[in-house]
Image 1 (cartoon, rainbow, N blue to C red):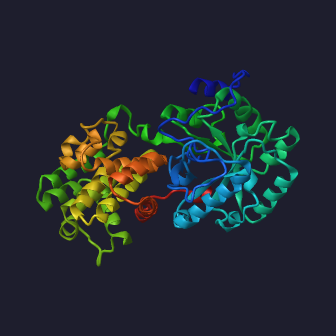
Image 2 (tube, rainbow, N blue to C red):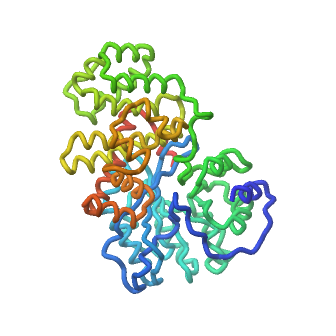
Image 3 (cartoon, one colour):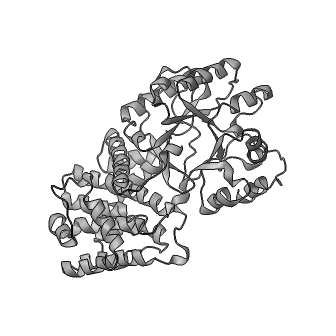
Length: 473
């Protein structure tokens, strides 16, 4: 894929014949271009609920999360053309019921609907400016002048749209209408999981020149290598947003080296686990005043609801305790390096996991278990952040055995909790249902807890003055 992409970017790609069928998505990143129903579901029926609606991060060039891509993943697609609008209506209703407007206070949303659903009334109730609708081609449909008129009416209301040009071939879009349709888009999509020989030449060469005002999204970017092509290869200025599992595979530091601030944070965490005196802990912070400032700023944020602001590490230990301080020190591992967008993206993902797992533990009413589940989520990406493999990266921290087992070996009593969090990230309904059953949890509760955790993580980042340029989307 990478070689084909580079060839396409440099204009060396030659036309070849390929199958029109899309290849299956990678296991790390579901193919979000399709909203799919269970294979056993008859075509004339639709489910009563869409189940878990996953939302995966979309990042800007600084690798800051600025939007989420909403999709439903449920087996093999089996929807009659006449049922497509009904399905899209169900999707939009589900998003309303999830109250995604809380999320859109801090991020933007890409929502996939069919091109044939432009007359769906619920489109007009979505917050203009915050939602970008990705228009998917439906087999057997033809783009018409009437559809273009519908687009014009919706755009007058402030709604914005995107599409994947490769999905609109001549059987769907007459050559004479291509300019009219593509020129109306706010974003165009390049899917790295798509068949490259059919997609790359016209998209990466002809179309950007003809539509220079349209911004581009690179979707299903699987590796740091693919991301590097988008950011540095010829034509890199065409890409504004990036989506895919590359964050969890891209190393933020080269050569496995931990910087001085991260080393100090790890040392402080070791002192806390060893029950060192408060003065000894505070002495480490005095060696790096920026770390102390960041920690106190976060602890004093409104989200913690403290009656008064703390000014010293000793006060922090008295008011919050060692376990809580240890928990929040982990944030500094992600924010100690300046202008590291990849680390901030990993922080947001870790915070979501941590809060989600903590809420699962709190549901059972066990405070200590909830604390340890938070640590499980928070440290689950530490190997990627520091480029040090498990268990080496965790050994000095002397974490509880339950946390280590879940993070390192994916076993033990916390393993189902972490597996559920990962399934939610990937939108894997089969695994979500399986792990929820193991934990005896209702799917609706899982959906609510996960969305609550996404919003909570964004509030934490805002209060910590980690700013993402959402308005630029």
